[in-house]
Length: 191
Image (cartoon, rainbow, N blue to C red; front, side, top):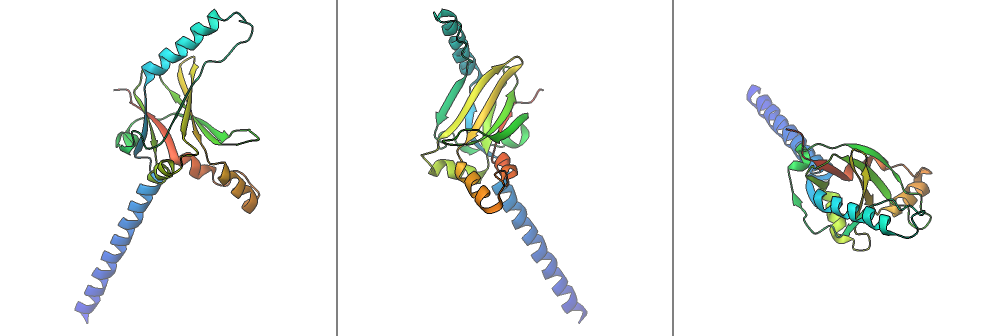
């Protein structure tokens, strides 16, 4: 009887441990940003922003000020792969919100990128798979100069989610916390 009780306890412990390990693995794979989606070339973007400033100076209608920005629109398949720097490098999220556009209101996440830092955009495996499948909504990010570095705006083309949230819950922000977890900008930490 004592042997039978120990055997049941050990099997129960093993089953509980294995279930916990599986659930932790699923959570880690689905909700952790560890897939590299895109490298950010700080030097190239800085040159492009500087060229825009120079063109602004050469314009004849200098009264019309154009804010410099670089828009990078590429599919999600390019440069994708597991990258553990996505777990160890630094991040500095600034804000997240729905774009106020009547035609297509995408979800945007803004990040700060310090000067001269190597940076990558990381996604969850779930979002990386969606990017690879959906060619209508390419992977888009915009870069703006700031006084202390760059602001990177990652645009998630998921306006259908906003409509579904509004229809089912009456709140367009019902899944914002999940969307904010789907992609992040990471940059090399200070040594």
